[in-house]
Every structure is written in C-alpha cells, then in structure tokens.
Image 1: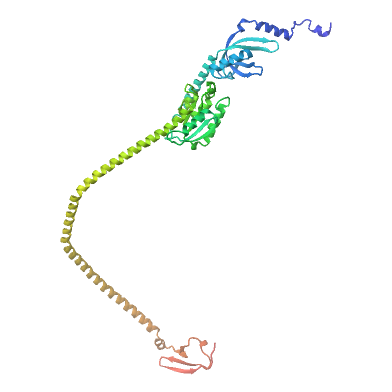
Image 2 (image 1 turned 120 degrees about the vertical axis):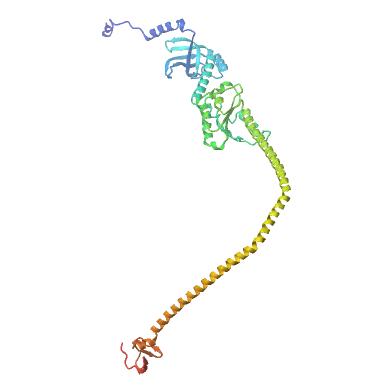
Amino acid sequence: MSAENSLFNNGPEAITLTQLTLRIADTVNVEPELHRQWVVAETSDVSVRKNGHCYLELIEKNEDGLTVARLSAAIWRTNYVPLAALFQTVTGQSLATGMKVMVCVTVNFHPQFGLKAVIGDIIPEFTLGDMARQRQEIIKRLTVEGIIDRNKQLPWTLVPQRIAVISSETAAGYGDFMNQLENNAYGLKFYTHLFTAAMQGANTVPSVMAALQRVEEVIDLFDCLVVIRGGGASSELNSFDNYDLARAIAMFPIPVIVGIGHERDVTVLDYVASMRVKTPTAAAEFLIKCGIDAMAHLDELHNAAITAARDMVAHSREQLAYYASLIPATAQRIASTARARLDKYVDVIPAAINTRIGAEGTRLSHNVELIRASVGQALVTAQMRLQSLDDKVTLLSPRNILNRGYSLTKCNGKFVTSSTQLHEGDIVTTHFKNGSVRAEVKLVKQ
C-alpha cells in the first residue's frame, strides 16, 4: 500500500461531485412542494434566445431596494409562445425586466446546469394590477411633491396660435392633427413646429424627454405644447406611465395638451398636463375652439362698441338739443349782463379819466421838479470841473513857467528840449519873462 493511500485510511469516506449533485437532483426533483408552486417575484435579465426559450431571473427586493432572493428561471419554447401571447393580450405589453409577476414554477436541479425554476404558467392580471399600482404611486408621489397641478395652473394665451408639437413625423395622429388645424372652416392661422420623438418602444421616454428639452430652449416662441400620438395597442402607451416624464410635463413652463391613444386610454401624463384630450384630432379641435371663442368674444366686443357708440350719439343729440334750446335765453342774458357792465363803464370812465389825469399831472410836476434839480446839480458839477481844468491850464501854461524864472528856447519854430536837436550855426530864440534873445549856436556839447 502506498503512503498516499495510507494517509487517508483513517479519514471520512468521500463521494464524487457527480454523486453529490445526483443526490441533490433526487431530493429536489421529487419534492412535491417544489412542483407547480405559485410564486410572486420581480423579473430580471429577461432574454429570449434564438431557439425560442426565454431565460430570466426571479428576484425579490426588500423595502430598501436590496435583492434578498434570486433564482434562475426559464420558460421553454413550447410554453413561452402561448404564455407571451396571453400576457400581451391582458397587460398590453411584452414580458420584460422589472415587472412584478405571479408565475407557477417547478424547481428542477440538473447535475450539469444547476438549479432552475421552470415556469409553466402565469397570471397576467397580477402584473396588470401592479402596473395600475405603479401608476397610482407615481400620481401619489407627484401629489406629495405638490407639482401634479403645476402645469394646469399656468395661464393660457387668449388665442394659442404658436404650437410646439412633440410626435412622430410619420404618425397618422400627427397627420390628422395638422390636417385639422390647416383646413379649419374658420380660416384660423396656426404656426406649428414639430419636435420629433419616438412615441413607442423602449426609446420613448428618453426620446420625448430630449424633445421637451429642445422645446424649452426656444420656449419664448410658443404659446403651448402638444404631445400627441395616434391609436394603437394599449401596450404601446405604457412608456407614458413614467415618473420622470410625468414630472417634466408637470413642470413644463407653458401649458401642455396631451392627446395620446384612444378615449379609453389613460396615462399618468393625462393627470399632469394642462389639457387632456382623447385623440390628436381632439387636440386640434380644442385649439380651433380657442380661436372660435376669441372671435366670438371679438364679435361681442364689436357689438358692444357699436351699441355704446349709438347710445353715446343718441345721448349727445339729446344734450345738443337741450343746449340749443338754452342758447337764445343764454345769449340774451349774456348780452344784458354785458350791456349793464358797459353802462357801468360809461359812467365810471369820466371820473376815472379825471382821476388818471390828476395823478399824471401830479406825477409830471414831480418829474419837472426832479429834472430842474438834476439840471442845476449837473451845472454846478460842470462848473466845478471847468474851474479845475482852468486852474490846471493856467498852472501849466508857458507864460506861467517864464514868470517863475525859467526860459524857453525855440529853433525853427520848435521848442528845444535836448542838445541833440541843435547844430553849430543854428539860430535859436530864447524867451524870458520880460523879453527874448536871438543867438547863433557856436558849439554843441553832447
């Protein structure tokens, strides 16, 4: 015996993994309570393979959203086709990840593939009820947040004519909407712009959210927003039961009209939009009605203005007739009053003239006295100034200078004031107080 064999001679007896898994299979696969057991769970990782089998996981989450149980599951092709059709018919949508389901499972363990729950039946009404519950939870959440009526409270333009539209460009509902607006019997003009979005399928929510963002970037160009989609399967409307999309509509800065599906179809968007209509055509009819109401109001104002004008003209004519009847008597009264005032002025004028003449005579006499006084004062001042000038002339006269002992010399008729004016041989005349002397210049010193 080898050393290796001898090492485990005293140890426990072991079995192979295959033997262990076969024991598990024998235990699990024959357990009655694991056969056709109805289970409530949430779907995850739902995938339909090319071979027609559907593989998924059944999970359970606690109140905190943490997964507390997980089990691999499968729906074999022979069962998947009828179950998927039944589920689609009742709930209006395909089996997908994130749904609450009630399924009948048989737990099976295979030594090679492990433990798996094979789904043999499903109650789609349970999922339908859960969808309604989710819708109510969204509505309740929006209500608690205080925004469910936010868009409803926005004021409407009297005539909303600038319309932003979110829809699929190829949708029949969009075509119906545009045809209704453009061919209305009242000749109303509407200005629309389409912001395209996917209105069905998995891309619906992000596509519509992106379109909402594009509208907000040019929000000042529009009076309202219309979100429309034509009829179709109810399953195609489930994307509109989305909290993020509903919140965006509720918080949108201009009124929103929602026309999605048929009259019987209701989504969360219908609860938050300012106006819910049953079809895209009804959305157009609402806008046309706004225009009709505005025109009717204008007609009312027009008629009221005409009536008011007529009343004013009639009243003015009545007043004019009344005033016309008063004119003769009023004119006579005014003439009498003016005549009396004139007579009074005639009586007052002579006395007023005499008073005025007397006052002016007194004023003239006073002015004459002032003039005389002013002239006398001016004469005295002039005489004093003249005497002062005479004294200055006398003081500065040549005669007075000679009397003071000075002499004045002339040469060629001009007074000599500098030696530079004289030259040898010049004849000069020197004047004195008592006579004059003529002399010849012999020498000039500089």
